[in-house]
Amino acid sequence: MSFGREVKRHARIMIAPAVFLSITAFFGWNATQGDRGLVAFAQRQELLKQVQADQAAARAEKEAWETRVIGLRASRLDPDTLDERARAMLNLADPNDVIVKLGSQDKLF
Image 1 (cartoon, rainbow, N blue to C red):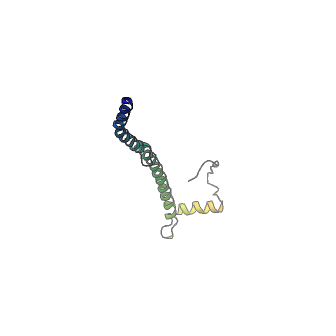
Image 2 (cartoon, helix red, strand yellow):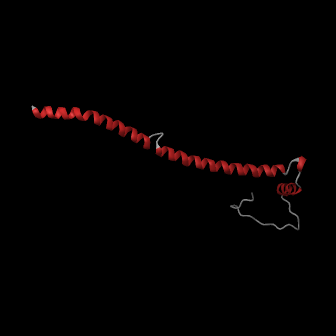
Image 3 (cartoon, one colour):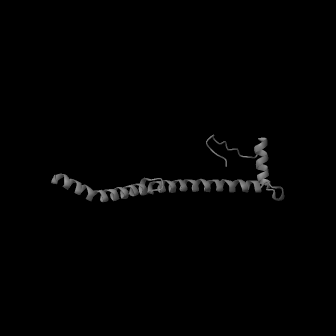
């Protein structure tokens, strides 16, 4: 009988620390692996960097297009831009022009 009492006494003593240890382990795991943990934070930071790079590329492309469009406005017509667009649309070339053929992977602009 004394052995059974000892086991019950040790079990009662160990219940509170076991509960608190399991709660601590639960919160520790969620702090690192959970939906809002450190791993998810690192993934969100990487995604943020990628999105910011995409945004910068889109802004650069937008600025390039705005520069080209400004050259075609009636109030400020750029003769070179107009000539370039007319030749591209009509598929014409001046006899004195030097023509450089680009491959399919090369982009003109």
